Length: 141
Image 1 (spheres, rainbow, N blue to C red):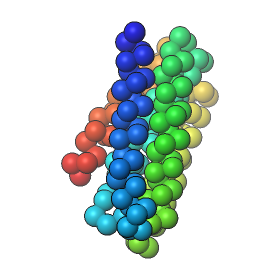
Image 2: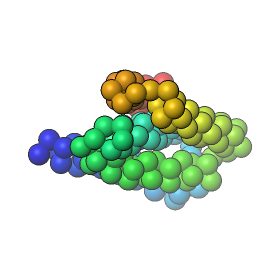
Image 3: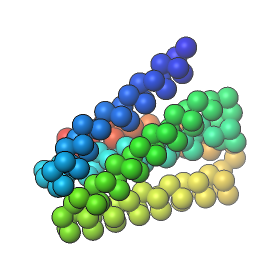
C-alpha cells in the first residue's frame, strides 16, 4: 500500500511541470524559468531508478518502474527547455545534462565494480536521499 501511494505521488510530481512547459511551448521562450528543478529532478529519478533495480535492492521494483517513468518525463522537459532557451541557457542546460548523465554513469560504474551488495544499497540509498533533498531545494536557488 505504501509503495502504491509513493508511486502515485511521484507520478503526480513528475506531471506537475506540464503547465509550465505548456507555457514555454506556447510562448516559445523559457522566460524567467530556471533549469535547475528539471536537472535535479532528472538526477533524482535516475539515482532512485538505480536504487530500485533488483541487483541493487531486491524487492522494490516499483521504485525502479516509477522512477524510469519520471526520468523519461524529466528528459522530455529538459529537451523542451533546450529547444526554447536562449543561447546561454541552452549551453548551460546542455552542460548540466551531460554532467547529470556522467555522474549517473559514474555511480553505476562504481556501485557495480567496487561495492558489495549491502554497501551498494547504503551508498546509493544515501545518494538518493541527497538527490531528493537537492530536487526539492532547487527552486530556492
